[in-house]
Image 1 (cartoon, rainbow, N blue to C red):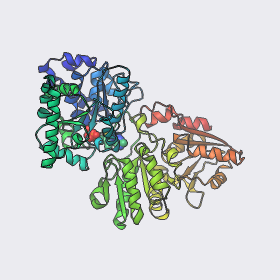
Image 2 (image 1 turned 30 degrees about the vertical axis):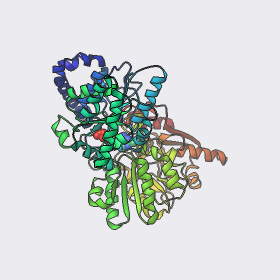
Image 3 (image 1 turned 45 degrees about the vertical axis):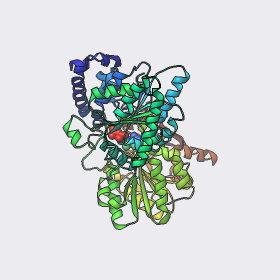
Length: 610
Ligand SMILES: Cc1ncc(C[n+]2csc(CCOP(=O)(O)OP(=O)(O)O)c2C)c(N)n1
């Protein structure tokens, strides 16, 4: 890897001879495959942007220019080129690199990302700030065709010309989101790819003519004529109609061509979009053949124990919903671009006409579900906890206020392995518990999942959220608990202790281990909002100490609400200590690392309760 080893800082890429660039790209790919297949992380998306990232680093001055990677899962090549090659293998570990761009990790990471479709807005803002401070730095947003489906992108495109912006948007079109991309825009891109490249007409001529006297007027004339001609022959060009100059499509694996086009494009005034066509997984046959599988590989730093006899929550959820939909034709499933991750591959095959992958559009997914719920249809809308955050107002305005019969299945609830702050499901109880009429369930066992899903779909008139972690269900503890309330809302693992751990979901398994060490009882909840305080008090009132252990933030948590209720009702028979995730926590490493960091490992809980 002689060429790659020469690159210590971004500007070193510019010193690589033109004829050696293809070899450099080959070395980057070999390195990526070696590290990511061994360590985990996003492979296919990064293999697809090797030439593009090299070209950007050769065209830009990273001391003053900015690249914003949308989602940021494809920023590994950028990390490699900005002095982080030797620590790439630490990605996702507690002391290692983050899996996404991180302003604190490197000054070359211009903007933190993790959630899709934010790059164009951020680029516009950053460019405006640069101009206001007198800098002529350039701003480039790298946006995938999947992320292009997200609504925020259109809000930004709509605003770009009015902001007098010069940003360059690079549209990395590999026809894939995590699964195959969906939607009308994706079809529009396919049509654009059938047409001859717009580089020569749009850019080269413009560049030459702009330099000749009177050339600008000539360009305006060409543009006017082109527009008239286009509408005459009925060929509509979406981006150009929004006053975004469209360039492309170009081969995203030809670094030399990319470099010369990007250089020219950066000199064109006004907002512009360069349509780059790439192959997800490029250069690694297994990933090219199965880009869905190689989108994200399991992080090797994860310490979660996985036993073959135990099923993952999301897999069980998908299996149960598929079976329920078999019997009830009114059940439909809405999912924003996370079919495989949400355990819905089977549902999507078996109930094709009742499965709606709406693209990376959480807000639309929620309001679309609210629309479906009006007439006897039973929508189950499945969204990861951290991505559901952006649909807060849709949940409140379109579901909560009118108490629509929508079941929100909130996957990746609680702490999440390796992906850092942006992907933690630690806020959902806080935000969902402010929604009028909302109920929140937290299944812990297979039996809970089945009963609660059934209850959510059939027994509750109104909105319900069923939240579960990305974890296995621990079958070994299911027989320990005895119901202590008629409605199965509260159950108890008793060791006849005078102290108890109050918990739900993932934390039940941890609490059982802690209780075994400390000789404490475990009180498990499944209905976590609203709380039945009186029943809960009846169970907890006999203890001296109660520790609530929840892998969510304190605000809105069961512990916080119970503490307020006890205070307001002058009940002080037992001392309640709340263990939660500290919002200032770095959230680095795996689930166990994060729990440990927040004093919620089994040993830490046992120490506190002893
Ligand atoms: C708001 C939001 N929803 C879902 C995701 C999960 N997610 C991560 S990458 C990805 C696919 C992105 O596709 P694209 O932008 O085309 O990039 P590619 O991986 O194809 O390069 C999705 C859905 C996310 N990061 N943010």
